[in-house]
Image (cartoon, rainbow, N blue to C red; front, top):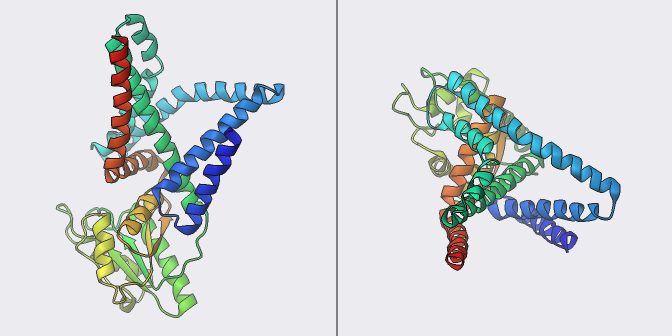
Amino acid sequence: MEVILTLVFAAAAAHGFVTDRRRMRNAIYVGFAITFLVLSITAQGGNNTIVGVGIALVGVAFLLSIPALAVVLIANGVTMIRREGRSLANLLTIPLGLLILVAPILPFYILSQHNTWLIWGSLWIIMLLGYLGFVFASYLAYSFLYTAVPERFVAKYVVVLGSGLINGKVTPLLASRLTVGIEKYADFRALTGEAVIIPSGGQGPDEPMPEGVAMRDYLTEHGVPSGDIIVEDQARNTEENLIKSRLLIPEPDEPMAVVTNNYHVFRTALLTRKLGITAHVYGAPTATYFLPSALIREFVAILVENKWVNLLIIGGLTGLCVVGLRATL
């Protein structure tokens, strides 16, 4: 049965990827396919000594990796604070690391209390964390798949999403986006004979100029003709980047390439589909220390953007625990 379910979900993921790779459901299909693949391998371990030993070794490695992961996340939070300053976003990995350290110990304490309310409340938390963990793992796996598999895509317009400036200057993170944007602009221009690059970003309260203007200056300094640049200087977030850049394109149905950092690619792709924009999103490299916090922020944003589905599932898990609690009281 596990093998059949693996094939079913793998086929669903493959079909979704081919027809439109910008769907969150594709990530869930991938997650289920991997889950049932692992279960099928585990089931085979009972009939094969070598496979069984291999599974046991993987299990031990997994258990040992839990505290290691916690330490890495806490250390990453400290690094983020030192390099990027104190903010809620930069602190995200520290409480997550502490939670991972404490989580394996809590069940033993809870069971020792023999408190029905506490046991069912803990079960609800475990189910909630299990659901979020599954979706997060699916999101990571599919994000990698989206960026790793090339797309045969040609566009006249290349939109580069902005990010914060420092003293009016382009940051290394934004420079990496612009570098990939210039590469795509050059590729498309070589293929079609014409291309336009749109740097998109408004002016933040602590910025002396709009991000789009600073990005334009960077582009011209790096060889892009000013006639091939259209500045979008009003957007305040990713959705506005896409909407306001689209309004600057004369042809309403013209496909466009979008460039952002690799951690931001999949959520941006989901937004292009939501907005009805024909687009493919390209990722620029990001400093390794920045990735854990950034990926967590992106995941939280995706959860919020799909809040009704997530609330429905969480409500179902809550209902199961309430029924179980009432049955045992």
